[in-house]
Length: 148
Image (cartoon, rainbow, N blue to C red; front, side, top):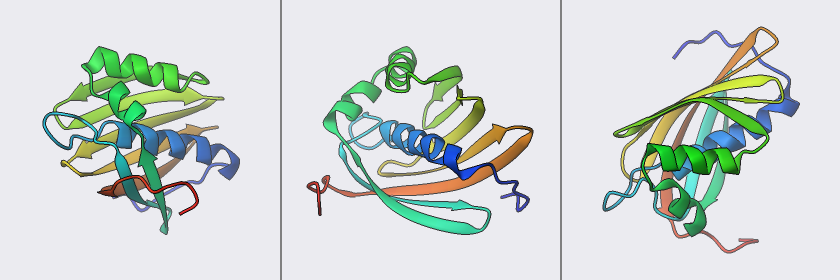
């Protein structure tokens, strides 16, 4: 991974990162031909040498919206991120690549899926600067009840 990072304003990062985790979890190839199985995912992301961890619940509704063909998945994503515009989208086998623009920031995402886990890179471009995050995630079981 390239060790040269330029950071962008942090107030813009949470939306792009949330969309990365949402779409990456939503497209995971897991069981019986589904790209996603509902459940809890433990997510680790590294940006500029700093690592963060989080937990994300992929609901049955998200799973249902992402297990179609490329056109159906893109349509679902466009409807899910109405404040962003997806300008490029490719779903081929275990890999998804897409580009979206939200509030003047362009983000490209490349994710490779391995059943119940995935890894990928998200690059944000804003004001001539780029910031790269490498993310890995693994399904840990059923979604936790709220507050647990």
